[in-house]
Image 1: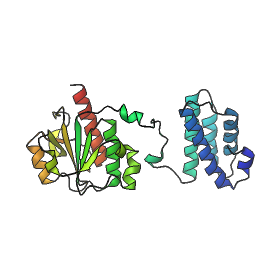
Image 2: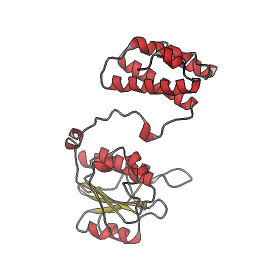
Image 3: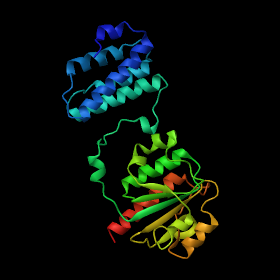
Image 4: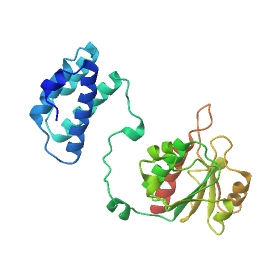
Length: 263
């Protein structure tokens, strides 16, 4: 770990970037229940607080944050995290969702202990890799057993999908297919003009169709859903009349998951 003396010899901007990385290392250690070097941490925060690069408002925020520093590990973790994000905002390097510090466990053991439910989804021509990755991440949280994607859906191995999914494309089985691969299953579609989600009767097992961001669910898939469990819709009050598809999917899965687990 770089000494504070060496840190002070760096150009001011470089010193702040290095300080942000040092703070993150403290956060990771605290999450791993490793005892932090509190003397060094205090010295680091003191060094940051007098940086000529920071505004008086940023210094005030730092002083307020650290006024009750080190009461306990949780408090220390929050101080380090908030301080790091003050530095990242100043450096105009605010992280995207996939860059945020994660408390998730690593390794294959978490895959083996994952609870899986008889839920599947079909992504019907979703074009955005961000939405595909986000849907994979939500699917993992709610126990989706398999994801079927159309030829027109963004590739889950696209670098943006991989970043947004936070590794979930390696956890949930998926394959490319068509509506015809959904035969002999309880099928329903997340689509406008369907049954209110509060009243919709979810199947205990089945497959939900999630349609394109632009055009919704294709007519072929809608026909299959209408001949099975039908359509489910989320009531909205805004003037836009729609929400992001990955957000809508999260709402749907919360309801399906809880309705089946707690009938």
